[in-house]
Image (cartoon, rainbow over all chains, first blue to last red):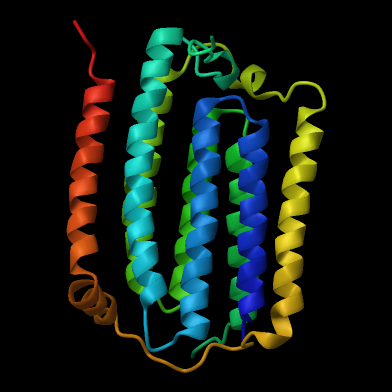
Length: 102
Length: 170
């Protein structure tokens, strides 16, 4: 059978991919991709832990339920922000979004 | 005749699909292909949820992530796309790519190392426990009714906020 450790390792790899995207990418939409990948890694961890350590209960699944809903909202608001940034700056390069700089 | 597929093999294939699609989502030349790869990665995660006896989460993952978030991202890409290639925008400057790779690699290896070290103390096989799909609904309604209502309010607020943000002012 698949052990809990395998899930944790897959989740850690997803987290690493997401962190790489967050730290390197300049396109705002790619950064949103990276955030979604990290959220998914966390969801996978919750589901795996609740299945292996807490079998009759589904508390981890409840957290994943809320997390998926929150991530969908975050994507909607984030994409709206990207649209405004594009309208104001005609670019979604995050290094160029420095209008708030004093 | 039933063909016995070892669960380990399914797990490895799922993991490979999910991870490769996640890398492609960040590295694909065209942003559109990246979004599609992201969708494939989400489907892989849904497969993991099926594996973990969470069919409702798998369904929610496909409906919300693959159905809504990826489509929303595709529309936004079409709205903000310009003729110039995204490749230029996404090329890391200087040593930034290497630094990011080291940072992410070290973090992932550290976490995976901790998980592997703790491996002997963690259960190798899931304990038997058949969880009906309805158990999640029962727990949500019986134990967490107020968070559910707050979640609904939050969703309305986020949708209104997104509408107000994206509105074109005349």
